[in-house]
Length: 313
Image 1 (tube, rainbow, N blue to C red):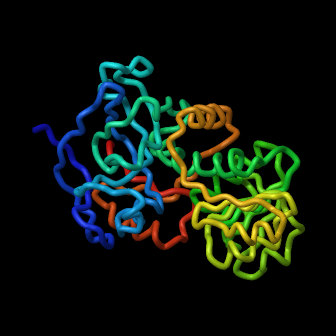
Image 2: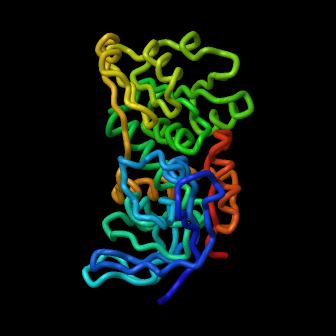
């Protein structure tokens, strides 16, 4: 059996269950491409799955390869694939129900793959798909954000927030972000019009009502956010389902988003990056063998931009 290096979990638990080992090379179906992984980003969903939080929502067969942000080169294509060929440089947020990208190779449906941005390397391309699709979906698909509207983005310096700020700025919205004082200038450089230091200033006391609140934190931050949504506005969360009763009481709408692969949006993002309108923010790069450290960093919730695992030198 052909094998590859991969990081898998054989049981749910803390970072110590991540095992760097030999694993079977993925087999591809007729509509799949086999990607030689150059880089894979680390996202909160990775450690949430590792700890078993998604049991019952998604049922996995263990052992499981984690990681659903990938940039690499097409190694082989299935019999029914005509959109890609070996040698193509691609990136993807693949189906989270299959083995992921913490490995030398990954099998992905061709419909979930897009050509990577030409102007960035694999490290920076791998940091885009999951966070980028999440921000795009929440702002434009669920939030309906348009030019001239006001949007509040929580954790604006984070992996998802840093793309949300850039996308909202590109769209022509008035962008307000919450961040720590050390990240204020960083968020302003991304395109925010105003940054609120969440450690010293309650955001609900600092701004007028907005058209869209993008909640990436949940809990009491989500509860306080109802105070700043305009009547007819939208509160969209990627953490927990907002209360329909509270939305009705505040005469606004709400949504919870759990994203799916969207190659068409990745194509649009690649164009924006190649045009210099959006940039990929990578704070930490580690080799695949140091995945445990990467998970500790991700769980700290204090990273700026993304953490990326370099799989191929």
